[in-house]
Image (cartoon, rainbow, N blue to C red; front, side, top):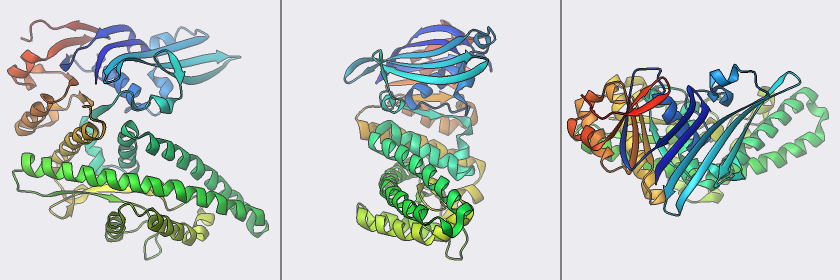
Length: 414
């Protein structure tokens, strides 16, 4: 797939933009804070319905439009994408309204001008985003790493995405009931019956998530090891990627198992393969065992919402013992493996979004990334310095200058 046209209205620092795009690499050149990253954010937002930079979607609406104090402000992203099924038009509307002095915000998604659920937009456009701050996938929180799994899988597997949505709703309901039971104590007999119903529904959804994540991380681990071992380190280092499911409390009674216990869970999960019944029984036991603790906390302490995954280099945890260079190599290997995974799973190459990452890489890693770009049907790349790219690459790329929310074609890269 590839994008043929991108239209922005009241999005970030773009009041209005109409941009034709073609297959191959597009190099967006400009100083910082001119709008390069905003373009990539718009594409990523359309593909995932999430921003990689802000938690509140209404922050994406153009600031100047918001200052006009109009009763209705609409930010709009429209993308025309060429797929194997033909040309499609995808649209996302960000709508801020003021009624009786109160501000409200909502989103609308459209495919070929017909309104759809946000979830139905997923998979219509698939992207791989590479940011300098992606090193946080090594050093950051488990929540950040879970978010990476969920976003990647939701682009290629709607069953997973629907199940994840169901799980999150059930989890919220179960947690609310746990808090209610903690307040009412032993007098809430009927509440415990309802808790059992929620638990069984949660177990079913959790088993599906566990199984999908296990297969995904297994496939990604192979790709990561191949790229890292063969192309980044010349066979000098091994890189392992392990999924760490939260199947139970730590053996010592702590809420978080230690690394060795998490590895035991990982080995057990991989050994089960597609044995759904065994995984279901194991998680049911874990959830039952945790009930007393969960009632005290008012929340569910085991399950996919507590999962993690980590890198190991030469048998050592990369987040604790790896150098900055090793961490960057691991993330680069992860992103390249992600491209291969999405391509293999969908029989279509995703669009690659690179946000000023070349400045973070040394010469060897830059060369490897540039080589990969040649195999990508379409890539959008931002940089403050086009000299970071080989002249041969610059000649084949479409180069655009970005300045204060305006885009012009760069005819002379010198």
